[in-house]
Image (cartoon, rainbow, N blue to C red):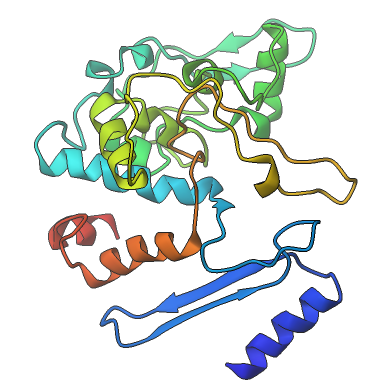
Amino acid sequence: MASLEDKFQNAFDTGDIPGVILTASDAKGTFKYQKAFGPKNAAGGKVDLDTTFIMASCTKLMTSIAAMQCVERGLISLDEDIPRVLPELKDVQILKEAEPGKEIVYQQKPETAITLRHLLTHTSGMGYDIMDPRHHVWRASRSETPGIMGIPLLARISIPLHFEPGASWVYGGSMDWAEAKPDIKRNLVKMTFRKGIPDQDMPFPTMSAPTSECVEFTDGLIYDDPTADEYGGSGAIGSPIDFTKILDSLLASDGKLLRRETVDQMF
């Protein structure tokens, strides 16, 4: 372990990587490793075990847990039509062709209804518009910008599908759709807010990553993270130590978050 720590310390000393937290544990709770390295910000502060980070797509695991809690409670099933609870998905189309200066071409309306299982396994056909050139063109045809931040959730993730639900796999905004279901949102908020839980139905127009916690790019620009809503696919900010507690619970199948059989079904 000392050799590993020496390598990280050398990397920080030479400026090759920013501050990080390393954490590891086992299912039985007999092994635990936690170590903070490097600078916290340009002012010279150091990362400690309570330092928070933008958790990005690690948020997706928490949303999946919140969704499976709803399945356990009988609020929704994995394979029922999701438009029943998310009517915004009822008339979604499949994007067939999109080229600059040409008319957007859609396929027929999907024959298969999107399900929660599709959303949680990235097989719904919902991608990220910023990752697909066709969706760039589709956004431009509507005088919109792909991947724009700081706008309401549904405006950001309401895009045509890549394919028939269940027919393939694409990484994207499915988890944001899953989190849009009120019961899932409530479970997610309960998991991630310790005190002063806000009204789950209210937008948060003033929320953003604290400037002191933002990541500075090499060109000197500050990465800002404005948000008008909670994002179940990427919106969490938290401590790696706290996130490891979630992983520990799943690894041990201790029943604190989900039943053992539910964890087995997920993984």
